[in-house]
Structure formats: C-alpha cells, structure tokens
Length: 408
Image (cartoon, rainbow, N blue to C red; front, top):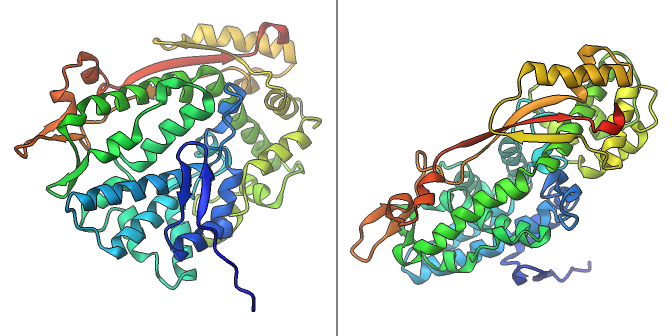
C-alpha cells in the first residue's frame, strides 16, 4: 500500500512558513471536520465592507497553532515545565478551538442553530474526533474546557491574551487593510511568563500590552462592529427567519440537505444527528439558498435575498441613544406602504438593536504584569495611559436600520 508523504509546511501571508508539529496534528487538519473550515469565512459579512476579508477559519486556526508553538518555546526557555503530552494537547486544543463555527462565523451563531454556541459545538466535534483517534484528544479537551489543573495552559487557548486574539487581530488587520489592529504578536509572546499558575506578561512589555488593548477596541468599532457589516448580518439573519417561517407554513423552499435540516429543526437539543448535518454545513449552503430564493414568490424572502446578493443594504444609524418608538414606527409605516406588506411584517426591513464593546475585562481574568521582584500588577492599574482604564468600561451603542430612500 502506498503511504502518503505528510506535508510539513503551510505558506502563510502573515507569518511565512507554518510547520505542522506532528502526525496527529496533520491527520486532524486532513479530517473532513477541519477541512470544512476552508468554507467558513472568518469575518462573516465583513467582506461586503472590506473586499479583502475573504480569509477563513482554516487560515486562523493554523495561525493560532503557529503562535502556540512560539509560546511553548518561549515558556520552556524561561524554565516553565510543559511536558510533551501537554505540548501536543495545546496544539490540538488551539487548532480545534473554532471548529464549531457555523456559516459566516458569528453572523448566524444564535439564529440558524439555536440553544448552543460555537464553543459547545467545538467541544462536541473534539469529543467525536477523540473517539476516532483512540482517545488521543482527551488531554486537549480537558485544557480546552478548563478542567485541567494547570490553568495557564487553558489561558493560552482562551484568555485575555490568548493565541486566538493575538492571531485574529493581526490577521483581520492584514486582510481588511485596517492598520489599527496590526499588533506585535511576537513581542507579546516573547514577554509571556507564568506566576502562581497564571499566564502573566513581564512588566517591560507594558506598552505592547497597551497597544494590544487599544488595537482590540479600535478594531471592534471600525471593523467588527462596522455599521454596514452589522446591517448585512442582520439582513442575513432575517432571511433565515423568513425561510423558517415559510417552511413552518408548508412552503417548499430550495435548500441543501444540511441547511434544510436546521431550517426545519424545532428542538434545541444538539445531538449526534444535528452534529452530523452541521459538519456538512458551510457558507456555500447559504449563498446557494439565497440564489434560489431571490426569485421566490414570497416578496419578503425574495427582497431580503437580493439585498444580500446585490449588496443593497439598509441605511444604518448608530447612536449613543436608543431610537424612540415614534422613529421606528415612522419607517415601518413607510415600508408597509411602499412594499405593500402589513405592519406586523415590517420588522424584516426596519429593525433596531444594540452593540457593546469592552476591550478589557478586568472583572473576570486580569492581564497581570510581572515585575523583576515578582510582584503582580494589573495592567490597567500599572499603565500611565488614562484611556486604558476607560477600556475596562462597557460601551453600548444603539442602531436603527431601514431601507434607503429609493425603496420608498
């Protein structure tokens, strides 16, 4: 029998060559569950605002694994003991941390699949893979779900300064062209250390940490929560809401088998059957469905689908105050008259909501600076930048979306 020579390198536009550390990681990357991430856009509908943002969860997962290799190397150099088994588990945990994302990542997380978030689905994928790989993922799973005694290992996977954030800020900055997120991830990793079983940063890296937190805040307001991208995601959510409503009324819609399973699904129990269908669901199922629905006899589904495909998105007002009922009703009345639909269906085209941004949560898990004498200080307290303390406060903005004037 012919044996395949296993690929050991990926050429990444951010870091250069990424090395696959061992055969287990290679086999996980080759698995159909992981290959699906090639078809899951990292930034949802943001490509409608930033044309270059077509990178995928596959790119991101490999980048995170690369940074984890750097982190392990740095910590070992500083005499932090990490066994071979723990090292492999870290690589597996960070590689698979986003494997549970659905189509367009966060955009449809709580609408297409209800009752479960992507972290829980990631865990179910990992448990399924663990059975296929003779329980070799057991340690990785315990690190991922924070049940492993050495807590700093989990913080490398999921924390305030984890490999996930260090990659996505730099990667999303690169692909969107938004320089605000271009952090120095290698500098931050080189300053990592461990104290009292907690991941810390050496105090001389305080300005790099400040830059990281400010970059995170700016990327959220200017990119992740960009009002046009926000509107596009909300329209996509409403397309699927309408599709579910029509199916419940007995309408037969065109959709792939995995997508139809979730459009018809009533139970919020995410069992093995749901996992099987989810493993075949990606961005292409949604786009294919939109193309089929853009000529549907239902005017609402038809118009919403075309709004996404043609990038004919609603006008968005993003303000500090919540819009009044009178403001919302004014636009709903216009839509009802212009489109000839009853008032109780205008919520598909006129809608409001809110978004929040908090760059640093010092109430749950701090980023502590380690001084030469061993003292630990929270970065917000140690910083001489007044705006860093402001980043610990949650900022809320309210949005109102409604069709542009040409549709009235």
